[in-house]
Amino acid sequence: MDKYDVVVIGAGPGGYVAAIRCAQLGLKTACIERGLATTDKVTLGGTCLNVGCIPSKALLDSSHHYEHLALHAKSHGIIANNISIDVATMQKRKEKIVKTLTTGIAGLFKKNGVTSIEGSGKLQPNLNVDVCDRAGNVVTTISATNIIIATGSAPAAIPPVAVDQQYIVDSTGALNFDAVPESLGVIGAGVIGLELGSVWRRLGSKVVVLEAMPDFLGSADKDIAKEAKKLFGRQGLDIRLESTVRHTKVANKKVEISYESSDGAQSLTVDKLIVAVGRVPNTLGLGGSEVGLNIDSRGFITVDENCRTNLEGIFAVGDVVRGPMLAHKASEEGIAVAERIAGQSPHVNLAIVPWVIYTWPEIAWVGEIEQDLAAQGRDISVGSFPFMASGRARAMGEVDGFIKIIADKHSDTILGVHIIGPGASELIAEAVLAMEYGASAEDIARTIHAHPTLSEGMHEAALAVDSRTIHL
Ligand code: FAD
Ligand code: AMP
Image (cartoon, rainbow, N blue to C red; front, top):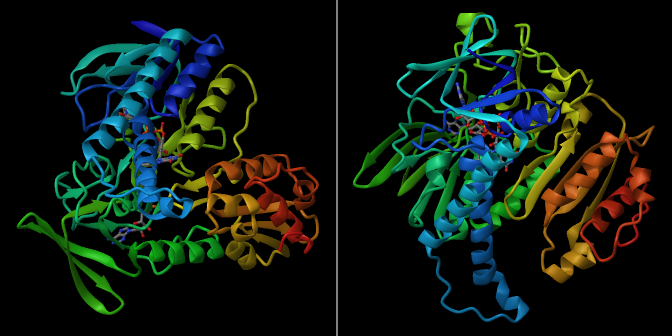
């Protein structure tokens, strides 16, 4: 039986990054990947590279260019008549990006000496792992000193809605439409629903988003959520809150949706329906319960702050454990576990994980939200700066949104930073770094920011915490 220092199960951003870091640290490492259920081919990179972060951003960028040409280029003096979208070319571009990056991981494995094994990993007693084929037959068994489970997550389903990947699709199907649907329904106004809804709306779909909860973006800062709802509404995204889908039926190549709102029973007919109601951890078939691994009632593997499971030598990282289901969180946990196995003492600060929603304007935040701090009775100072007052934003023609910094009233320590606006996904990095170093708002206010840049908005918001903003 082949023996490894570390066997990683799953090659998503949690698993493949962990495997590379283990190999860098001199550990003999294998990574088992079964491939995603939607395709026969086994590719590395997990949800993120194959059917998540990367393909969605490729389509968001394509559709952003399209919308810019169709609606905004004119104001720059650019005349672009008869704009049209060739969906097949857009999809081919997306697929090429995915292929380049996923094969790139295979190259990184080779370069770092990680043994890549195709198959489904199933835990066995005494730190052994069966590698099974798709029919469930054991192809080989390998043994490990340590195991890192990074099996990720899959789209959640809701009982009244049967995904057929033709008319009713999950996030994977929504990345693969071969034409722009005339009308599109989205169940769930979370990150994935808003991003995928935005792609097809920009290309011409009439999009209705049905969200069961009464609050829009309930986990975001209230001011950001309010601004986002206003701006998305202005763009034509029809967001219906307190709307719970009860039943769907496909008839005459259309999807008939019955849902319940505060006004009672409602119906809606669309060409396509995206189900984006969250994600569930992948633990089925992993053999966890058989070997005594603690898994909670929602299917998440129970871990401590260092990603240790209840079983000696077995760790778990990424979407399959508690915490935000984000690629960068999975990777940081993977690196930390690799270093811990190698005898180092790393840490992952789950309180400072940046969130990004890649709509336009983008939304990004890190740390605490104002409504939670208010509920805790914390004394806070808040500073905001609108992009309307930023020279660079004006030059770009992107004046929607603002930056908001929340600091402790007494110590001035930054507690949270919330951005809605152009380039929010990049701007948030400064806030994350500042918070990781325990910075005060005054630290950012005293830091020189290049002019003219969007990052000056961060500087001005920090000045605003002390009521001394200059350009407002
Ligand atoms: P995964 O990426 O899910 O990888 C797990 C891997 O394990 C898979 O390849 C699976 O095939 C494999 N596997 C499972 N069980 C076994 C087994 N028994 N044996 C062998 N292999 C197995 N996050 C962001 O941070 N930014 C974004 O912009 C973003 N956009 C997203 C857009 C969409 C449409 C979706 C769906 C998700 C998005 N996410 C985004 C979330 C992100 O993709 C996940 O948080 C991330 O992929 C989690 O990484 P992971 O390694 O834990 O799991
Ligand atoms: P997220 O977990 O961020 O991906 O968001 C998923 C969203 O889907 C949440 O805001 C849920 O409230 C919403 N949701 C879940 N089930 C339903 C349903 N049956 N009808 C409408 N919205 C739903």
